[in-house]
Length: 359
Ligand SMILES: *Cc1c(COP(=O)(O)O)cnc(C)c1O
Image (cartoon, rainbow, N blue to C red):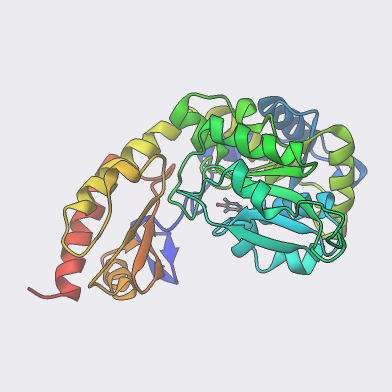
């Protein structure tokens, strides 16, 4: 057993879709990849990935970055000045799960809007922007500059933004003269679940970030896509943030392989997530509605069961999960998880629950 979680051997790793290792075919593509110094613009494999990603997203250009976090933070830096106001959903990854990036790297003020399953409306955006009036000094509030949307929404359990909601929120932002960013780390899942192409979701946004290391199973990296001038600016901030990464074609080739080969199979992850949710919903002490599982993320509360203790017992059984807090947990099927793994995991949960709360 070569896989480990928290330093312990595991058979079934459901903590995240980032734990996937490259497939043999992906490793071959990486081994063969032509490379060059990407800071000089000389890496053909990076260029191929950037061009293909821009085409899939219907944008003029894209830049490859080491992580989705960097890609989001470059987008915020590109579209704001220090002090500017960014509007995001209150649990947005770019706001709350990126180590304080907007404040530290862009000097941005972020306001988190309460969403319904991660979705907020154009009306909420409008209400957050000061209406100008000659009796009110216009210089006191931080100038609203950017609206950031996350699709699928990680914190809301992989929820998909309806296209109409995207158009309403991004359209209102545009009317108000604000920039727009889409954190599409898992945009592939929205497209797989609905059949709506990624480019349609991406269309209303000035910048779009997508991840190759989640979902698609590549070792690392993200792309930020947008207009050619925007991405030229993004290249400057990628360098400033330390993301100019030389012969990155080695990993970009894995990402390109994943982009071309692994999107169609995402519906399998959705089916397995759904089955896992159905199995878990039957266990007393776990609170979830399988109908809420739209893509690959299964989030649930554990009222009456300590989620940390549950996770420790599962780890003893060789099953790794992510306790989000004492009372909440997340599990994610991915490229390396089979139907049998799902059934085994459900059985392990049933045992763990009994161990943690003996009948
Ligand atoms: C994981 C994630 C990111 C960050 O990606 P990393 O490559 O892990 O830095 C950004 N946004 C969302 C919605 C994510 O789920």
